Length: 152
Length: 154
Ligand SMILES: [Fe+2]
Ligand SMILES: [Fe+2]
Image (cartoon, rainbow over all chains, first blue to last red; front, side, top):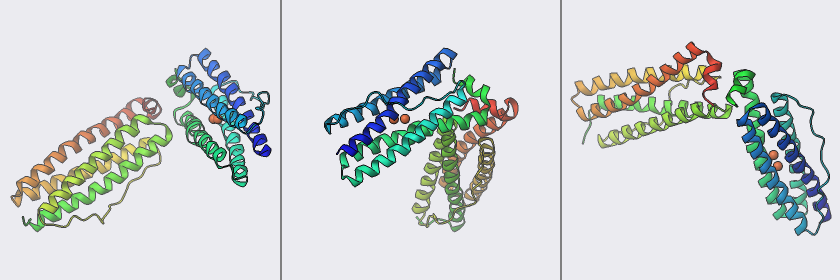
């Protein structure tokens, strides 16, 4: 079981990093006056908090100790397209880590943890990463100024 | 009720066009959605459903006339690669549909199938409404520019 717990703690670091990054980015958007981006990204931070909660609960259930300290590095992004790209990059790395963890759970026949992780992966792929990819596509199609105007 | 074979052929031809349009609109709607143009998705998806309802009416009418509705045929789809082009191609298809429905109405009139004629006239009215919307969109793109237009379609 401890290998699963270690892996879950590794995933927890991604979720905690996501909470930090989305909170920082959403507040930055609010400060710049892009309220629609603020709303979407602060909601994303809530989703990540939900993921973190699931992982913490599961680690405790497996009698492990949740690692609340570890984080991955935050990006150096200081404009909207860079911030969106950095968020997409984070989601992709998170998804890769989730897939590896799902495989591990399968090997250990921990199907309940596996199932929970698939749920988180679905949010990561279909909600977070997909939306971010759409925004970068829209910036290409509309031009940055028009995109930003629509995000006020 | 035995239907006139000329009328049945005309109705089946319109049915083929409807099936074609359903597919084109449906794919275009979801392409708009994939790029984040929710407003275009909603409008074009609804148009695709309307086409499906038209196809349903035509199928029921053909069956009532003891004919065989042909659902095997599908015309050529005009699939665009970007939203502006897709709207133009939808407009082109819709305009062709309208011409074909008018011809089918004339067939019904000359064969004295006034009930089929009435059904097609009702379909035609909805077609013209959607074509009017498509014309407006193409004209907006010309007037305000594609990027400004798309900005309003998120
Ligand atoms: Fe997450
Ligand atoms: Fe996420």
